[in-house]
Amino acid sequence: MTDIVENPRVPARLVLLSLAALWTCYFAVATLRGAFIGFDFAWPIVSRRLTICIVSMLVMASVWPLLQMLDRKSNLVRLLVVLVGALPLAFVLSFINNVIFADIEVTKSQAQDVIEDPSGKVRITRDDAGNILVDLPKAARSSSQPMDESSQAAEDLAPVMEDDGSGITIHTRSTRDKSYTRLDALADNAFGRYFLVLAWAALYFALAKAEEARAAERRESEYRRAAEAAELRSLRYQVNPHFLFNTLNSLSALVMTGRKEDAEHMIQTLSTFYRRTLSGDPTNDIRLVDEIELQKLYFAIEAVRFPNRLLTQIDIDPDAIDAMVPGMILQPLVENSVKYAVAATQRPVTVSINARREGGQLVLTVGDDGPGAERSKAEGCGIGLANVRDRLKARFGGAGTLKFGKRPEGGFETELRMPLELGRV
Image (cartoon, rainbow, N blue to C red; front, top):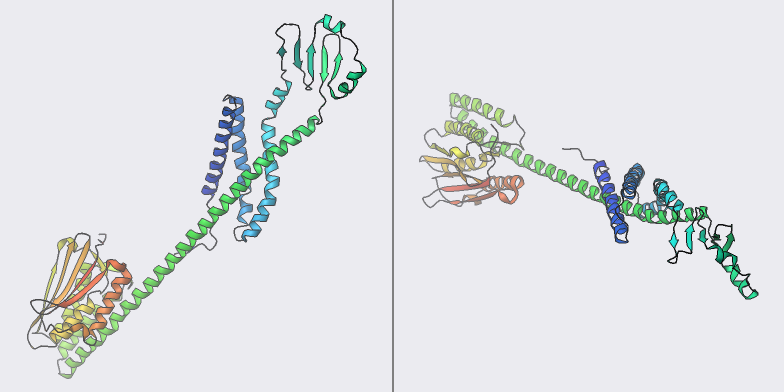
């Protein structure tokens, strides 16, 4: 029986594919979102985003062994561990994002926004600190008047302006300093990464459940095959005692009548028969030609008992000669013909075995021209037919069938149908 892994694991290939699919979707969505809101497909941004996806995928793959430790835990434990453990991982992924995009952010912060007045008299720029610089004409700067008291309250809320002689600097009053803004961006990115981690964890546990279900199916299949093999072995072993019982009765009759040479010949043939039938696995199929040879040995044994009354006829279709059949599947049927046809009358009786191919099926028939009574109801005959029927069902399921009854021309015939399986030469 094939060994079954007790603790099925999600294959590494499947884990990496799930991560690649997740970050590929993220890359596509983020890039399309940027294009939708007006950003061009700038290679510096696209290349950095691609780098982030690859590095993030590798970081998440590194926590896969930790997720494996939760495979045998309850769903509640999994949920709690993932909800808590995803937080630091999300911040790590967010930090990676900020580091890779750091040079882009610095360049953007160092860039100055220039707004030109249509009259050409006012020029507004922004410095590295984020302050707004307004260049006014000298006349405008010299004519500027002090503010009155009514404007004092507005001054407290307005940006602070300084005139350094070349222009006016407006210091924007922000409630956030630079470091806080970066921390806020880090937390904002971490929030999005958090749900990506949760989504992948949910996908991983779904894959783990699928692996467990497949392992359970494999175990069930193995157990079912083992049960079928045990049933086939049991049914196959039922044939040997039955056959041996009948043969010993024939041998006893020969000894009692003083036919010692015939009895010796029967013993030798019986020895050859059992040597062939017991040498292999009783659950394995054998070639049809080998099955026919076994039945010829049986005919030779019974011919000693019925030298003038047992006639045989064997007709095998050449297209079916290499077909595979359950071992000794014909034995109970041949025995029935000998016992209930040959032994039941004083005239010669012909026992026939035919095999032919019909499409994808192998058709075997065992018949005789002896008395055509309702043999299936006779004691012993029904046991042999039931054994053959059960073996066909155990081996082929509904594809193996058994039919029997009186022949129109007289006698009794049994027909077996099974899928045609050709043996390898």
